[in-house]
Amino acid sequence: MATRLRLQRHGAKGAPFYKIVAADSRARRDGKYIEQVGTYNPTTIPATITLDVDKAVKWLQNGAEPTTTVKAILSYKGAMYKKHLLRGVAMGVVKAEDVEAKFNEWASKKDGKVLDHKAKADAKKKEKNEAIINKPAKVKEVPVEATEETTTENVEATEATETPAESAE
Image (cartoon, rainbow, N blue to C red; front, side, top):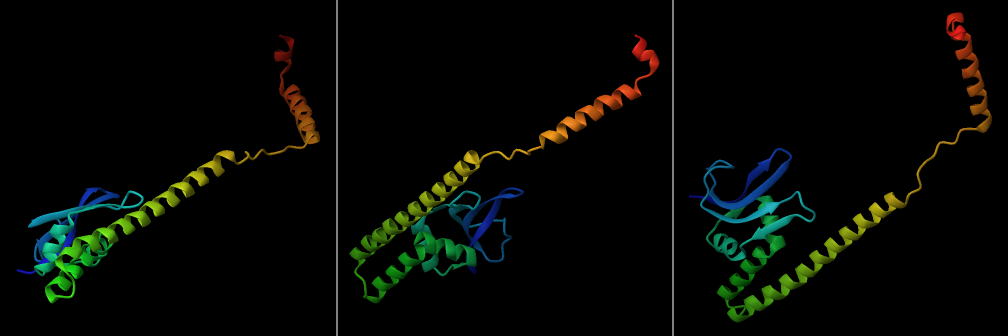
């Protein structure tokens, strides 16, 4: 049985929400799956990803093939890096004790970058909102002479349209 790590779509029309699952490659996109590995919500900024890295690594080591999008998510969260480190342990290149330390160091650097990115996005959004709030309102200026002429013309036009019966009252 060929197993794939892939996205299973949920959520409303125009508001997708995905589960990251290990499923048989012959199963339907939103059909049966073997195990849920995480979730992915692309509608938030930045996208919200919850992933059980250990489950994902277990499936990768057992031969599950990730789809393109899931592979990008796994790389982003460090599952591919952890698989790489564990393969180094199997080859004798890396010590088993060092795997968790290296992975945690990498994860902390990554979290710092994500927080910086989110802070920059929030600052940009705040700056944009302040620019909109502080922007002076556009006021259409009408020449004073033109307004005087139009008001006298309107008064004369309304006087001309009155019937003699209305003026008698």
